[in-house]
Length: 227
Image (tube, rainbow, N blue to C red; front, top):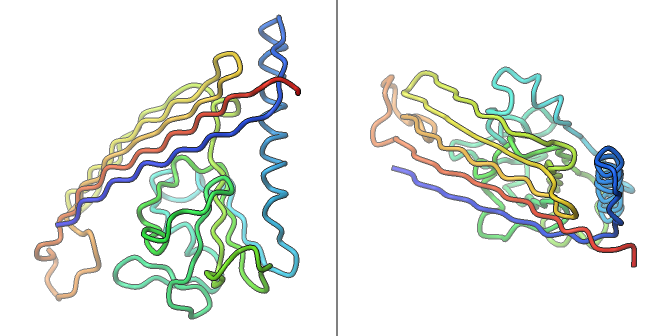
């Protein structure tokens, strides 16, 4: 029996002077949100490395769409393999992957298990390999750089339900928006199935292999004045 739960949060600050008209305010928020993403990208140099980038459109085009497990998404990149426990190996290295969300390094305790992350809140994902600068630290088999959705660029909400074999049930919800200088985005999902890890026997139904997982993610950004 496997039970996992994850919650991640991020806080960013930048400059914005709210406009008086609603249309102008919406346009201003969207422009500032894009500028924030561009500034964040500059913190992740890619000189001398190879980058495989997946956009939100690439995720949507996969058979399971946003319900695709994170490991299955990264397996689309060359040189990536998966073991029986769902850990990823890049270029034959044993794990040694570094995960970042909006430039923030994920703690070492969960960095080896990509399946704890949910592709639903991804705006884009980049797998960086090769000759990496020293600032990336010791986990240099590959860097998984995740940029999340924001309320300014993904307003509104959706709800979905995915069902499948082995009693798979996967409901999920997401909602984002802006309120003045506040930009917010939240998502959550629940997963239950009877094949949590690879079946070690020849039987069709794995023994003691039920998994129950709850995952949540929240992003809040408060935009300060231009000064």
